[in-house]
Amino acid sequence: MENKDILIIGAGIAGISAGMYAARSGMKVAVIDEAGCGGQVLQIDNLENYPGVFPAVNGYDFMENAKKQALSFGAEIIQTQATAIDKKENKFFVSTPKGTFSASALIYATGAEHKTLGVKGEKEFAGAGVSYCAVCDGPFFRNKTVTVIGGGDSAGTEALYLANLAAKVHIIHRRDEFRMVKSVSERLFSNPKIEVHLNSTVKEIKGSGKVSSVQIENTITKESTEIPTEGVFIFVGMSPKTELVEMLKKDEGGYIVTNEKMETVIPGLFIAGDVRSKPLRQIVTAASDGAIAAHSAAEYVKSL
Image (cartoon, rainbow, N blue to C red; front, side, top):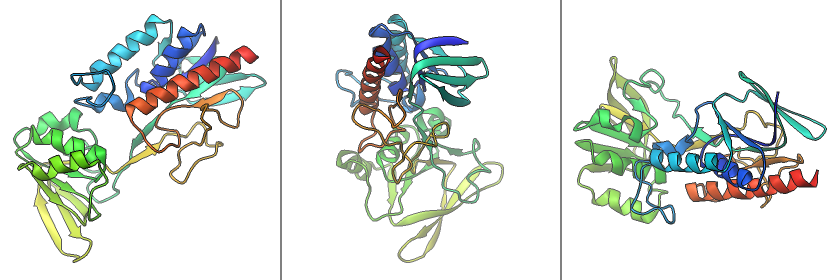
């Protein structure tokens, strides 16, 4: 069994930020993540709104530099899956396929995952035209027609990214206006390659072996329309990954509630990043959460 001062579950920007700050404060730190390092940031083509990072960089390069920073301060990154968390007296125990790790404090920074539509054809065509990552799969649809589903910031930025590759982009949103920031919305409406379908929901994704069209319905007129498309990119929100800490208090969206120090009701257990209840989920806020959680965790360890 490996013993650390602080264990961190999740190696997205919140977890890596926490690892860097905790290691820099002299703590023995390990960051556990089954995918290695990166999280949702890896899906960003151009990171243009992180202060001090200009011109824009892609998410992979950003996370590689963050990872190198954390490692340079002494943080350890372990690629394995955390399968269970237990606490006995003043020690946390995290079970993984690579063994059990223990620490005096634990930071939970698992983030969130994409929600699904739950419509016919979505599961059947996953990987055969249905995607949840434009940066990952967009290049496969160069000069083709694609459809984006969603009305938030992610849907807007991904539609704009796809417009640089595809011949045409349809974007479908169930409400009468987008939820995304105004600057992104304006760019959508002014792009000649993007066609907007408001007050519309997807009823079915169709095809034979691969996606060929989407069936949509107007929420006001109930009129049904079939849109030819070769790719469907779904961005309808996120679900927090809370499966290892279901005992904690959550908000209406299922996100974990903490105080401003990232503390939970369990002493020594801290939360950081997109899994936490907060008004804004951005890379800069996740990094901030990680730094605060690391500081609070280090203070807790010292108090023991």
